Image (cartoon, rainbow, N blue to C red):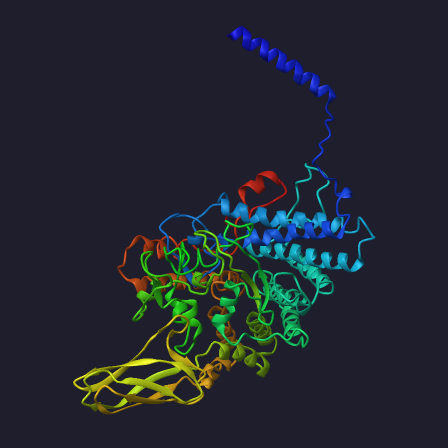
Length: 615
């Protein structure tokens, strides 16, 4: 047997040697750049490859495990008990490596495309110009994500000349920002207007201008602090606001902004740029995300849409809202979904909330119940991820204007536009002015007039008298208190065998939405108001931690939150709460956490790199 195997082995080896002599050793599946990028189709395929890294970047951990939510949310799971989300990590943590690698892969793809864009001058110059603009912007955006996370990084702007061309020193953060702004500014003149495209999933002029405003605000803040950039930020935001052809405007409905994203409807008036996801991984589409799964209301009901639900809101976020702000009950759920055995979308509504129970509320911006791709996947969602909304542009304009000239009329009005859209136009309270007499059953309640619609309530009785009203649950607003009221409606009671019950209603006034005069006394008070307003409007959209850092208040704010949590929760010692304030927002956070460490693997591969302070 052994002898036979030896013979077979010898014959096989001889055959292999014979074949090797006849084989062409040059690979047939490797394309030299000079042989590609020859058609408009190939340029677009290459550009799609640059876009693809957005899908990887915004698909999962960035929404709950990277800690980008700052003081707005907390990681609710008991495992893992170390990582970015509770500020307990080392430079070897795999999330740092994946974030760095994904961004530099996107940069590398853009570099190859830009270096070979003109391989075939016969391709329509307009096509090459558009591709160049989008690739330049995406490369700059990836560098923006890098500089926010790591500070100064290697500025690699051309394809490597060889596999050994790996040692690249770090540019300063200022140099990185300058290159970002230069590339984005060039791109602004090359990309298509958003109204020409008709959707926000592609880089467009409005997106470039709005992101330039954001970049300039970051460069004006910590750690670079080039305050002259506030003027640039204001000017870029103003270009978006004043673009009559694009006609940007706020969606009248705050919840409608996110329902549009979930149901794959484009709203280019408000949503200027978004990462597109689609499918359920049982179809031909595999570019799915996780909005509503990792950061939505928890449920095991597959008909509603399973949600892992990795984070909950902090009490600070909940109480950042005024009572009349409709955004609160969309951003923070006032319900819990039912079990898998209950009907789809069944909700158990929360009766009340206080500083203790506020920590037990789910984020509610992305509700899987609205998804239209069926069947729903347990770990993947088709919801588009917003990267820039018009409300953000208005708030950036107001912030930059305030830093330059204080709380001007224009800056205050920009904030008021955002607040008015988010304000209730519903019934605030009902007062039973007379309980009547003789009621043996609850009378029918009719609410009419006042210019509003949708209010519905039932009466409660006791001792033959009407004692109160209960508004029915509403899937968006929490309670059916109606919308669109400009004056107090009339409330009447009919039936129930009784007589004489009367009630009056008060409504939320539009003037209550306005920025209070106490917040516009000077630049400092208005700055603080805008900081809170950004959280009220944009919470859970991955901006908060970076905002706190550029304002220079991140460490203090997180320590303050830690003390607040300890006061709010007292002696509660469930593992999740311990994870929240003992291992998380307490002693772990220091100045070194304003930057991530350079990944250990990169320091090993690139000997020209240096580590960030404190790591």
